[in-house]
Length: 121
Image 1 (cartoon, rainbow, N blue to C red):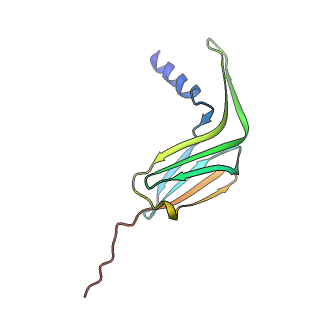
Image 2: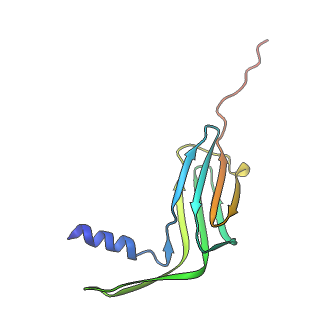
Image 3: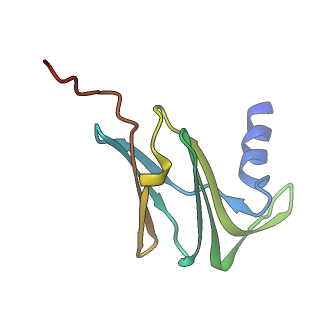
């Protein structure tokens, strides 16, 4: 019974924000993060990047309303996506780039290079 309550709270207690589906890929020199953002326009996406986190906030063009009927009646409306990810390694936020096409947001974030070339005299 306690597990069911936690699942219900997680599904219905999002304050109008949904967590988007995402994939984090390590390409060696950079991280590639792909977010699925249906019902979102490019101009409604906000991306905040630090040296170890990425956060996206994306407002939907139209809200999504879910209703649950049964022993508990509840209605919730989602108006935006919000997700913050902690990256496994430090990146260079100034060199990060993003593209958005057909509801898919792709971020490329280069890692801070740890290799240093040493000249031999």
